[in-house]
Length: 312
Image 1 (cartoon, rainbow, N blue to C red):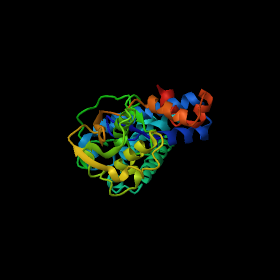
Image 2: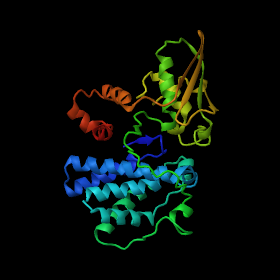
Image 3: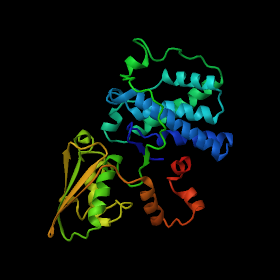
Image 4: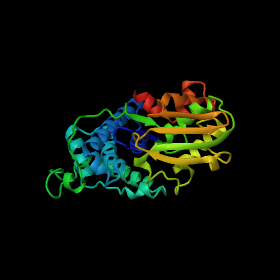
């Protein structure tokens, strides 16, 4: 389940759904219970990530830290823990969170093990609380509390829904590049003629991660946009041979998640800007059509977007 929460900059589904589904299968839960557990996990994860703040994200892998709490809540609800046991489970989790942000910066796939650790911690914390395992009472304050140890800003304690702000990533490139792909698709639809050059403009804040120097095509925005112009299909970004040499990367002071594409052709210059990639239902429809999915039962089996759709 590949999604991104642009409000708190995390990927909650990659942690929540493995927990919800695995516990659901183990306990033979009905689908409503699984969805309820996942929805509560999204709420916990988004609320914690928001409470931890930007200072925390600069030092820690927020998907792992907030995700561990999300996994704990998901498991706690699925296992039927009492409110007191649920709180104890979160305290057990809090004493063991972690995740180096270097995993993402190196672009070698290491975040998957960060997430796996968060998944395991969440399930273990819920089971521990169910069995009455001891836990730390004061998890926040003092020199050994989370606020100081994990650079927690603790400025905003509002409860976030988490589901409404999670957007599915249904095209084969990193989430930061989706808006650029959406902008490129707008230009493709204009039948601009022979292309001389393509400039992909992304936020300056992501330049260190998205400079195309490592991580393969997934982490190379130039590849994604060049592939879109080649296939003219945002769900097919496999080959970029035709336009990759004509595609360059630029960085500007634009909001994170936004993207601009500027194309120079024989007929002039065409430019499109997208603040955030389209609502996931737009991409879902494209993916369904490409996969020849025509009914809801088949979609339930095959389309990765069904969990969030069900939660809404």
